[in-house]
Amino acid sequence: MITNRTFTMLKPDSVEKGNIGAILEKINAAGFRIVAMKLTHMTQRDAEAFYAIHKERPFFGELVQYMTRGPIVAAILEKDNAVEDFRALIGATNPAEAAEGTIRKLYATSISENAVHGSDSDENAAIEGAFHFATREMF
Ligand code: ATP
Ligand code: MG
Image 1 (cartoon, rainbow, N blue to C red):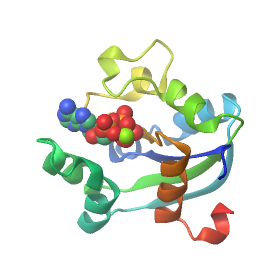
Image 2: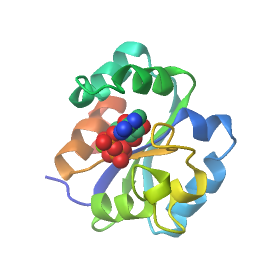
Image 3: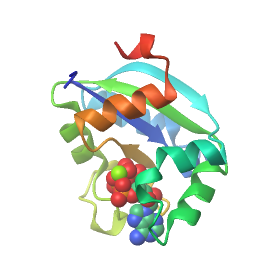
Image 4: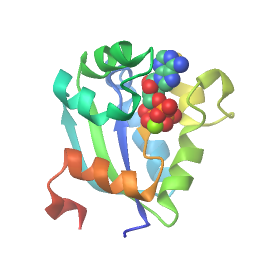
């Protein structure tokens, strides 16, 4: 199991607001290396599959609509302790609760439009990276 990689998406609100450059700069400044990256537009089927774990939650429909309304930037990132360190860099799901200086504190609007995704485990980082990229780029 690879433990030094995580997966991220700069969500549609980040692309719409022109925040890609600023967010990537913070990611690089925090010591992450970009292993793979692409601009892509998730279909409804993609978003429903990616967030399948949340399908029973009341916000699922809103989440799928948000994630499909425009392009995202998907990327695989590398750093020691990548999953945990990246979750610290992005901050809490709700930007109102995110620590000062975190990406969500700086760039997220609300708990639903929260600028970035970060994998929550090594296992999910591998699954999510493979979802968006050919396995050749993961390993
Ligand atoms: P992500 O998985 O996108 O990195 P997260 O792990 O911090 O976010 P999750 O609990 O996995 O948070 O929720 C996935 C996404 O669903 C959130 O990032 C947000 O866009 C949306 N979401 C979560 N909770 C709510 C909520 N209470 N109301 C509306 N949207 C929500
Ligand atoms: Mg999550």
